[in-house]
Length: 179
Image (cartoon, rainbow, N blue to C red):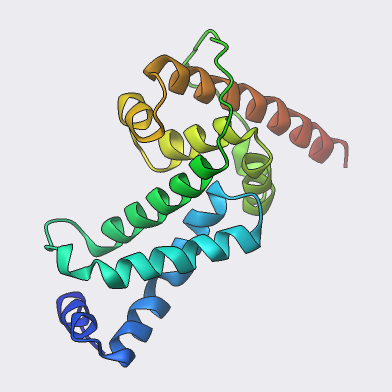
């Protein structure tokens, strides 16, 4: 068993056992990240595989100036965004009024899988921006740069995703209350 620095160094030397250990340590978390961006489990698995090819090929560029998991997540996100870009997403450019007021959405009563499915069913542009902003913590100007869209479009996509999710959560909560 290696610590992270030893693990990376062993992977750089091409040691298969270290590469396997790195994969096994992070594959589950990184698959979950990939799954939030892709439409199906198969696409998410493909993104994970493509990301690990990039990871193993780019270990020389990892300088330990950030946590390893953060560096790996960024590669998975960038790989997913590249795949999404290849599908030539047609972003909805409508502007929506944005309200960032905190609301009690009743999330505590929802199953994680139900919430994940709600997010996955969002329109592609909304889902991508929602994941980057709400889950990954990127700022709208960063998202705009990453996706090649305006900051206003990023904000409107997030607002639209938020509105759709609020509506779906309210419907789901009313179903739970009726039971």
